[in-house]
Length: 163
Image 1 (tube, one colour):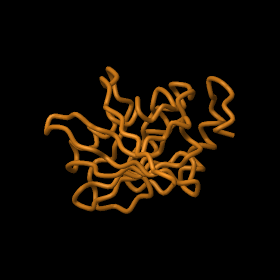
Image 2 (image 1 turned 135 degrees about the vertical axis):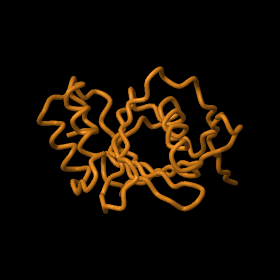
Image 3 (image 1 turned 45 degrees about the vertical axis):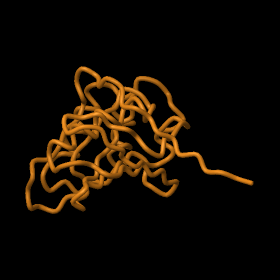
């Protein structure tokens, strides 16, 4: 007999400053809607504050999609988010085929936002530059190219998840 266990995580206190750059709403086609620089690779610690920040722009986020290579192995399938509008659960999907450094947020209304995930061990200068480029209107640079540029600008420490 087998059973499936769904992991639910309660959102912790968000960090003092969320490192996030979002593109202003514009009709221009872009590949990315912005960039996010988490402080760690722990999804339960990092995602709740991001979800609350994204909620402010376009309503509640209902699902987050991530690549498995970017995160610690805990990989919760659901996050309980305690926000100004009350408590809710956000589904988290983990995909081996998702490009490295890409996060996709799906809003309850169907809108989608694609964000560059800047590796946590990236230098301040390289991280800020990558987030700014990802948030530029009309940006057509894909996440692998942005991650390659980050690697060339300087990473704080070697990390096998980010070649």
